[in-house]
Image: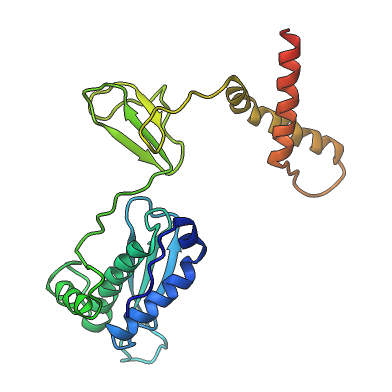
Length: 247
């Protein structure tokens, strides 16, 4: 039976584990006859461009000669790509089909061959609300996005971290400059003078505070630690000093 879809991404993240366990139990029972209970499902923050993958393994539970190796499967789901229940259900069932083909048939290649397609049809018949395709074709919701400044170029690049340097990096199509944009496509405001000051001085201040701790604890054991709040507090003090000096 289809579970109620959770539409809010924030609610989904909060209840992700519970929703995953419920979907796994449903698929395992309705599609695979409760025979995939050994499959482990994990959430990963290292999958940036794919919604999920299935790791196929063989292992021997004992060393008795002649005992065949047991086929195992571990499913990894992307925390960065799967941000709602619909994507979770489609991705999880897709990966469970991979696991079933491996565990039941002993087939791993080709990954989306005849055995995969046969099990995919079985899965979709049992769970008509889910479509199992040979790929995960999702538009990824990146946290940071840049576009080319050339009006005639449509190049857009997304990242999960602010790893694009608009000073050094260029458009991958026309080599023009890039500009960071917000979710609605409008250019983001350039960083303020204070933001730039923080960026330029944070590491310097952190090192200074660490060295100060080392001197004050010269005869003590343990590695010095500095909180980010302490760094920002000191950077703020330096900023105010600089502003007052320039008046």
